Length: 330
Image (tube, rainbow, N blue to C red; front, side, top):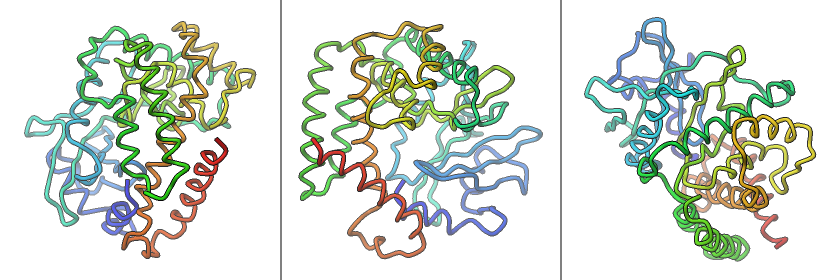
């Protein structure tokens, strides 16, 4: 999400974390008065609300940031997990019979979806036991087994690797030679990999199967936030789930990686070819993260002078420069 969009949304939130703007977007589903509060913002802005005794999460974004078609495609995938061993947060239909609602607001055109809250709590990686990590890996293996049972047509509306790279390339500054070379090298290699094993690029990965998108509930794990799901080989999800340990090279002898892979292999046998490409998937992720940050920071725009997000901007600029330096070394 662009920082300018985030700032505009924050401007609607009062000292009690309430937002009339978000209440307007939640109105197609209804909610108990006084129960809607801001929760977090990153790729999207999330608000929590109540209907009766149950909690729900409202996901919103500006019309230019997300395409309705991708959210609709995400919904079709989520529905396929009904009555499977994998528990995912399901979208809720509005009173108009839609899962995605679009409204003209004081901030412009915005899209919204409502999701059921899952039982359990979020765990920090530093607090997880070896058994927690093994269960985490097993849940990802279980998730991939279910995806492999779905018809490939279900995933047509989600981006593939070349589309991800094409969209990222549009964000690169013209004078950024290092990132443009990285973009070309990754695109050439993606094309080669796609041609070598095309069927492995037909199904989706979650793309962000990290602990903050999981809910641990007495030995069972629920999965949220499929917003970034994309058509890539399943093993890419292993790299992205463990990316916080090392964004450069997958360390298979790391105790956390060993526990995670032990769990994963208990549910699904990974493809050895793609395991050998985990470092490439990490490289792809670094580049896509860089492009997203360039878009979010809006460097050179009028918003570049806005002081309200200086703290976050400085943090993101530091990450952006570190990512760019990784391209310079190639």
